[in-house]
Amino acid sequence: MGDSSSETERLLREFYIPNYILDAKAETETCSIPPECPVLVFINSKSGGQHGGDLLTTYRQLLNGNQVFDVCQEAPDKVLHKVYGNLEKLKHSGDSLAAEIERRLRLIVGGGDGTAGWLLGVVCDLKLPHPPPIATVPLGTGNNLPFSFGWGKHNPGTDRQSVKSFLMQVKEAREMKIDSWHLIMRMRAPKEGSCEPVAPLELPHSLHAFHRVGSGDSLNVEGCNTYRGGFWNYFSMGMDAQVSYAFHSERKLHPEKFKNQIVNQATYAKLGCTQGWFCASLMHPSSRNIAQLAKVKVMKKSSGPWEDLPIHHRIRSIICLNLPSFSGGFNPWGTPDNRKKRDRELTEPLVDDGLLEIVGFTDAWHGLVLLAPKGHGTRLAQAHRVRFEFNKGAADSTYMRIDGEPWKQPLPKDDDTVVVEISHLGQVNMLATQNCRSKSVHEASSLSSAGHHDDGSGSDNCDSGDEGSEERRKFGAAETFRFPENVDISSLS
Image 1: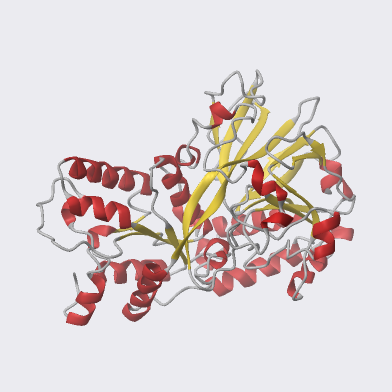
Image 2: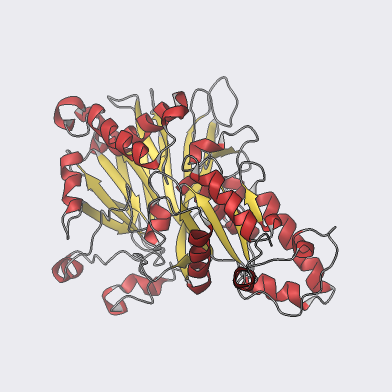
């Protein structure tokens, strides 16, 4: 196991997975006692500068090296399909150890939010009866996912003692369900260019074109392409996504300048200034404000009607938030007081209630209110589904972002309509520490103040009443989050 210390061997035997469980061709090992907390570790070696590679080395020294994977070399979907396929064969042959390892298995993913989202998508697509819960190691720039569940937001130590400490936290962590969100985008198919991504549109890795769209899908329109994707943290549009796009574009051009997490965060803040986010009234044309770009509709309950969502004309950024962490740890929704709960039927943000919190911001100065203890953005609504409709207007494009991955979205030049629709699509299991910031419906102080919890929106399944829900059920997250063979994985760090 790579360490001569008997204490270390005893400790890490609790996490060890034998080779024959991982590879059907390996020789069977005699193990009478199953590991208490077997783990599979996935690390993006290009995340966090040198930290990703160092962390990968340490895990391989402490555990069975074959249970630790570099996602730059081995895609998580192939690894998990292989492992779970082998587990099924072993269980059917009467191997009790395999059954126990499958029941107790936990996953660790080290990287940015993009890397974590990739693994979450893969686990979703496996559609396992008991999917393994996931712990996230913060190696990226924003690290909203790990921060939401108590794993911190800064690069962890990569030495042996730090890794041992993290493993013990994984062992002691509690499971927590969070909602998954499905995003569909429809736009006119280009006359030339391939469809993944559509030239010259550079879509994020988690959005892909699909042609097998059922006739029952309301977004299936002749001559249009339908793109499907998903997220667990947020979808945003407007000025904040523009700053993110500038950051990712700069990192793509000069990757050698983005090797340090603190430097990356400082660069991000600097771009917020140079992009005009602090002087938006002067540098950001009103034609790019949300109300001028899109008509927004919400469905507040799974069986409810679509309602128009009024957007103030000064709102330049809109965020559809699932977790209480955005832009490196801020909570834009906050906690509504009793009056707002009563008058506007708003609740505190819960990660498994089947609702998105929709928040607006006018500029970066407005965003600074998040630094205050009870600061929050402009609360617009909580919704089970959200729909954006873009028609021909003064602007020819806008910026969008899902879980940290931004893109520049062309807008209609004629009578076409670009549609983006977000709907609830099941749940995944996360691991949370005692410092977890996220709250569950089971932890809410009073369910009576949130009548929507009774509508079934927190179910593990898609809602049977939704248009095209049967078709949506056919699209697992891993297919949606499928990574092209030539993808530069460093863009996810």
